[in-house]
Length: 77
Image (tube, rainbow, N blue to C red; front, side):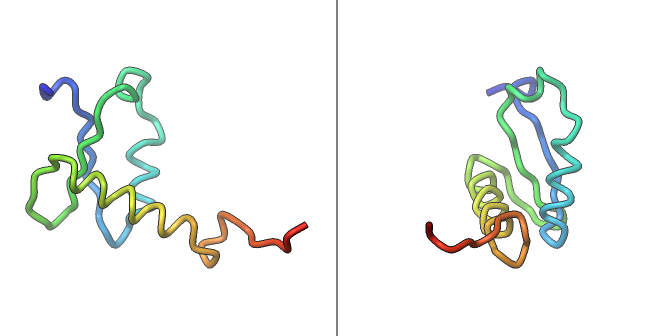
């Protein structure tokens, strides 16, 4: 991948959801086709896939937590 194929995103772990929303809210159609490269603020590391996987995992954990309120648990019917 060349730098032109990447969409670099800087995220603060302490603001994971809000930074993620802000980073992807207004991206162009062209950028939507690029590979996302995650950089955590204040941390060293190059995203060769591990940081992106970590970001997806952490976002998924947060948004699926009932306390977050995105999903509601209902009785089976």
